[in-house]
Image (tube, rainbow, N blue to C red):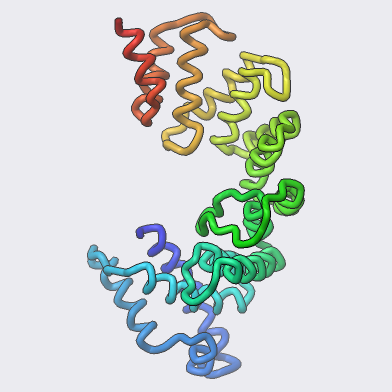
Length: 287
């Protein structure tokens, strides 16, 4: 809910700032009518801010939230904001618009994501690629409508996003290459994502070097990448797996001098993040 309220806050701030410029050319009431924004909506939004500022829970339901966000996001998108165009597509794809079928939701999402890309938001192409790859769309969901799994088309869209600077695209490209067992290409894009600071990609690239997948085994390179991922303070995908694998490497002396104390430290870190394998390793070493 906090994430949604933050998104709503951004949308409101953007729209309010836009209202003043639009009012120069037309009456604010006409703009509100065009986008279906009522005075009750404005009061509702104001009350949200009031409740948040007073430290209270505004009690928003998902229906309330998405209805308001949709109105404001469409307004901002039509004024040239690519981020808000992206949101509109995610609302459709996530199934948050009433009386719209799953297929229609995807069609509308594609329209808005294409519009987002045209407005300079490459994540629009990324989201379309994720639909063809049948992967979850962040901010949206797992609705793929009638779109069949098509890795080639997925990679085509994801590479368009990558070319335009979406830092998340390289990791998704790597995932898609991995699913079709093109491990060499997958590793190249995991490394590209890792170089951009993607923690999850660092884990996957490190595991590839550790296992000799798409490359020769290189424990030194694996240790470097896995340490980068395992040192993250955030429990994002790949962190606990990197920590566990580092424990294995230090326990077995893979590319580094064997050190049970260091191995236990990595196992403990992974266990703290919920790794059952790491917890079992600690129990084993305690005997």
